[in-house]
Image (cartoon, rainbow, N blue to C red; front, side):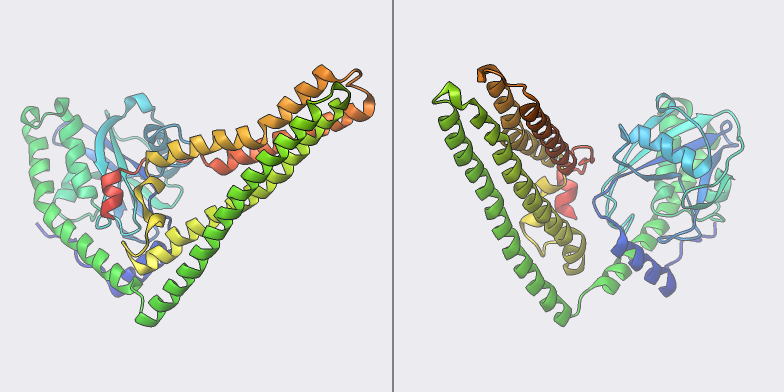
Length: 392
């Protein structure tokens, strides 16, 4: 067997470094191994990569899980249609497993969710997305080493064959399929060696000089001070809003003839809410810059709370959900409560000028609530395993 899993050239390493610097670490992907044919004559659907890393090599179809995807399986269905023009359903997919690690993909892909499907025979496919070619490849050509697979897709293919062929138990596989597994297992060492070498080269190319590191650390400290100050300002708007609400409620509730004073409460909540949201967005922007730029250049472990597990795992989803609830309770709900109180107490609440005022307050409160929901990013996936994140 002639192995094609040689070390990457300096040009390939340089192209990979560029992609690593422009990518977003911590994102997850969904990949699909589609096998066609019966035992011993199996073909696998592959796409030829047009971009680094591993530009020019073949890969299992797949891509990033996007916010509109309801699940990793849904993302797998979408990516298969986009990259190869092949339509499958989520129910037809079998879960193979999860794969992660910087060595398998130097861009820092958090988790690769891998699925598999078996079709009776090869069908027409068409390349799309970032794939330059979509083809059916004889598994024997991969086992022989004449076709190079990107990332750790040799191992992924091995696991998919053992998972879906003849019931998914290696002991029940037909002899030709067992031969596939033995051949792919023998290639894994060469693939791992290539992937580790690429990761080490990328780390070396992305490393900072002592002078650059000093500048980055100074920038980090200055921006961290700004973040702390903005957090204090943000919390101050909460306190000011509570005080203003207490004063308005106390004044308006003391005399039914002062019912119109209730409509001052929405303006107070809206003003403080917009100021709070503006500071919160700036804090999030600084945090994202820390994680995606400074941390990548300084290396793992260089920062503190900015790279803590709660910022990537499902703990972050819980934190965001609670924060959204509190924000809406603080700055949006008071508007509805004030309008209800005004309508219940005022003698003639819906005169035209007052009606215009109430409708305007309701519209602005709705917009503010929508901004809070959009800023919460609850639709983003935070499915990074905590142990994996700690090991990055």
